Image (cartoon, rainbow, N blue to C red; front, side):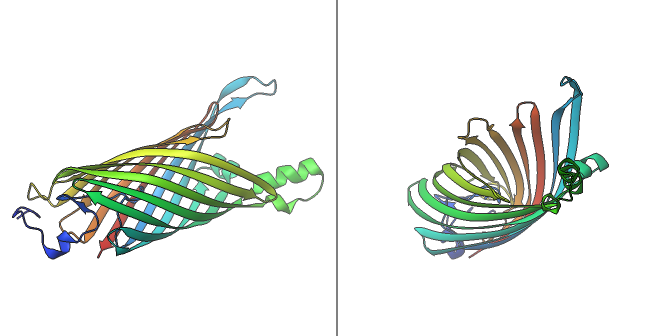
Length: 298
């Protein structure tokens, strides 16, 4: 029998933090949920990105298009706790490694590794089929990029060995307040949307910068389990990041997921994300990421 088919929730389901008016939301690992939940999650991901840029000859004229490819491996651990139905805390730790996937890309990009740490709080309230939430998150990112070619070129240009550019360290700290709302349209269908501001403070070696951006997104959650014998759910999201810097370009993200929903306290399955952005006029980045996640709820 499908979950909820009898019209009476079990005790576990009735207290589920991601349930709203009969719909148990299928949550994304890529998009912070607008719910106060208690959860632990482990995610492994792989990624591929392609960067295209114009090639310029010795006379400054465009002679063609160069393409570079980068592969990535990522591991994420997340923990959320809800002391009450109206308040939740969350923390995430992630590690990532990237490297060029061919000779040209490896020589141009080099290799990079880093980690992300973040934490935040969320306050939420529901009325009928609608839930409103406010959140505040902070984070730290450290990355290290190794590039032998850059070090050699800089050493030749300076006429001396310059080891400082062999390994470039970047530190980014950020803060992000946000507003979210969710609506249960049906026992099998729900939507949620969010808007958030993010301000980053970045330091690369001795260079400092500070930039802000606005991120707006929406998600569709479909759980077949309440209306069919199929214990599966579908998830789709779209988000756009709008930087405030004059020369920065918008970033578009599309995600899709297919998850097991047969148990109220468990979500298991794959998700994918595609990111489209322009780093500069004529310099385009397309990135693909696939993850497999397991999240257990209390």
